Length: 525
Image 1 (cartoon, rainbow, N blue to C red):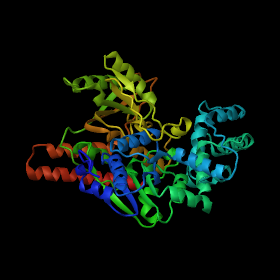
Image 2 (image 1 turned 90 degrees about the vertical axis):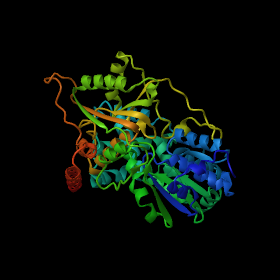
Image 3 (image 1 turned 180 degrees about the vertical axis):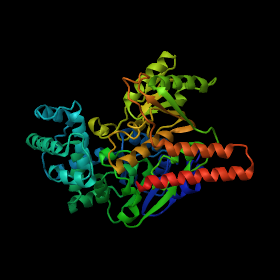
Image 4 (image 1 turned 90 degrees about the horizontal axis):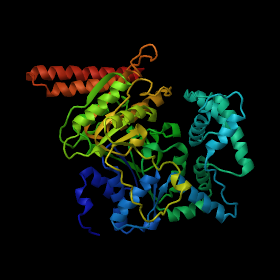
């Protein structure tokens, strides 16, 4: 039905194709700034306009916040009744229905696995690491998400060259005792929800009933799907069901949770009849930010994104003697960029870890610059721990006028006019824990995500030491990912330099060839 200020009229041709295509199975590769949430929302709206019963539509997201945002946008379009929730919320509903229909005992959901692991660690004299329970929690999530159990874990770790912080045998020992404790108490944890839901859908009678209810399945951020979530999705699909998913393999940054971007890249081969549509236009960032940020991606990323915004400032790469000088530079630069009428909330400072932001926050406050940390995302299983009204959208809390401080991970999905990406030294980017080629590639994608939060200005910084005193602070080197980034900046500067035409073309060509050789060298390592 026609709507005032018709949002469909503002779609680009590729976006319109994604929204209106009649294919039964569609995978939309939507790069940074491509408008994926808009496309997903209008895809649902188009389906409802075409007569699809909203109660037969299931939209799965990765966070409660994303589910709320989708419901809000649909509400603004006058659409209600869509079932929207995280993977864990969807799995919980499936498992509860299954158990109720078969007169099985109600679920006893373990809300805080880490507390149980802490007790088990205390009972293990050989474990001395202060963060042991956190490492174990993450490792168990990765293992369960990839379909492993304590018996198959050690072999899988050896095959994938994964190096768990506490050692594979310690993980197997504690994990086995944890599973025994769960069995005694009759618990299941959040990772078990996905496994149990996928298992329930193997029951033909149950699956048939669910297929009737969920005839149209949509999945957001598909690049972060892990193998067990993928199994749940495929079993949700009847032969007649439609599937629409959006994501960007170059923004897959949750490998520690088992995310596998190849599931999206190869979806047309994994689910028969799936067609891929590529949204390759970045409507957020300047061309200079788009091209330089793409340089940090793995050389096999296939990234070929074009910018639709006007040309802007060339990004900056700044080195400092130590962290204090770096923080002081950020404060000074912020003051210089803030012109009359411009709000502080148009700026963000992003770092790989929260610890790197402490000195930044202290320095900004000392210079009279308001700042606040980004609120924790309503992330994995948050709508299971605290159920929400699945129909009416919730109003997003407004924050004060302050510079945003956040980690690369937390900044995913957000944007600011000007972004500082700080602390980009080796050991932080890539993180020292990234021990495999796959983990190293993910660190590249994570830096790319941080850089592409910027609309108009991008400033990347790093420091040579924590403190200037050489005797107490070991020297650092900048992230190796900044080498191709710097080359990209050189190309941009050369293209803008007022030199003789033939000489300029020759210089830019040499720089591009040098960057290409560098990328090829990285690929062969």
